[in-house]
Length: 245
Image: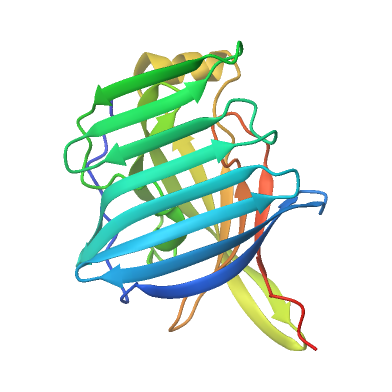
């Protein structure tokens, strides 16, 4: 596994994480609602568990649970992802133990046969699987570029870099109240020969975008990108629970 040049760049903690429950909507870029979701955080001592889950209208499930610490800088301890149902061409379950570097991938191939990959990788301290929505709220907008690592499941585990670049503020509103959200562009950088081949063969992963409300209490606003390797570009937005009288 190759890592392209830049030193590990753990994101510094600007405010304590650990108590969160938000409601989300997953849509196509055209606005069709695909799934209802939730994002939660719960602290247990020094460790925080962040869970992101989407229940699709077609019965599919996306679920990710990441455990991290926040002693000055964010550090991933484990990440577990489940993709299943018709919205995902290849159902998959992955787990990362960042303390040992052990990565386990279970997936079903084109013939419907279950395959397993069990590897040990040299994971850097800045590996960010399951933490992207958290980390962007702690990045100073004045920093021109932040680079962190991620284990991409292709399904073969591959260490890549996420290059996060602020693109400027954009106006948003809640009712008649106006706000500004910082838009971040997230590029996937694949090192070595694999990265060159990805560009030549047109298999370079698509860019992602994340909008963050600034101020004393930064908040996630919106995400546009793929939820899995080679997947379509979807939009994740804040949602409000319904059903009140």
